[in-house]
Image (cartoon, rainbow, N blue to C red; front, side, top):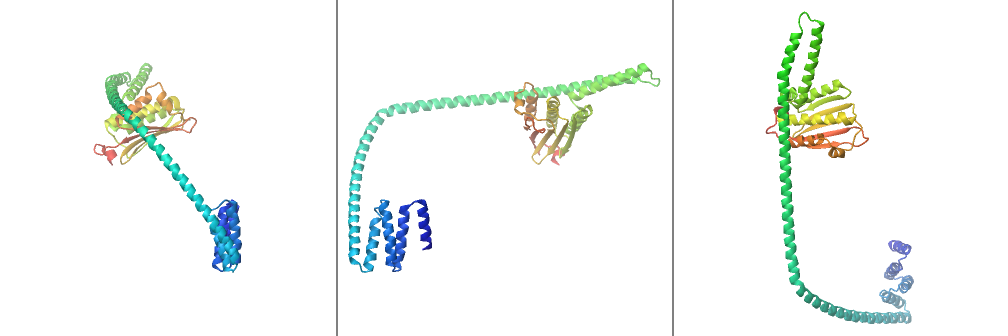
Length: 380
């Protein structure tokens, strides 16, 4: 009874009169099971009112039958007969209406099927006449798709070939530049460097004069300038100690020149990494630091080389104001193109994290490690 009453309250709040009528009938049937026929009839009569108000004709015969039963159980056979007649009359009318509706539906269905058959016959005739034309269209479409696919395939293969040619040309150009730099640096160091050192020894003696001291000073400056030129072309540390040693020497030079403070650290990548990798890493660092000095307005730069199990990571962070990385691709210079070309030579992936007005920029290059050919410093 509690659940019925809660259900009735909810149906009433929702304005669902049909649902409320069904619950009232259920309450009446519960009273009937308990033999409380007067209470049951009161619920049935409310349910009957709800059914009639909502046009719930299919439910009315059941309620009329329950009211008839309640009168019969209480000995009021006249009222029981009256409600039974109402139930029978309503059931007959519903049956007649249902049969009429079924006949109408069957007739409509027959007419619809006949129309569909006529339409299907017409469509079949049209389809038969246009079948040849459709086959021709399909064949023509297939030929066009085939030609289009072949054209796309040819264009893709040609683009790949052109890309491989450009990459090969870039690699050859980089190799040529590095060999020429190495040769010029060696010539400067071994040729002019030795001559300047000899001249300096000759200009300085036990009885050093003011003129000799001035000459020695000029020779020292010339030697320093020559050493700087040779370092920029190809640092000796790069050939002897690898990228880390050359980057450390470059950082020391930049820090001494001011105002940029550059620090270098390494983890599991402290020795030579292989000539191609060493040169690529050093040139990438050199190019990026040049970009920081020109445009970054930074006062501090941190460079890290970290060796992992399957890759080597170069990380450069600065405290500049940040910028839009999209400007790198749109720029007119060759710096970014050179960085990409050198990273590609060692299968490296480049990523730049920065934004205008932000606090600093981060430059990352990830290079895979081939353990079979990796130097001992990296394999360790």
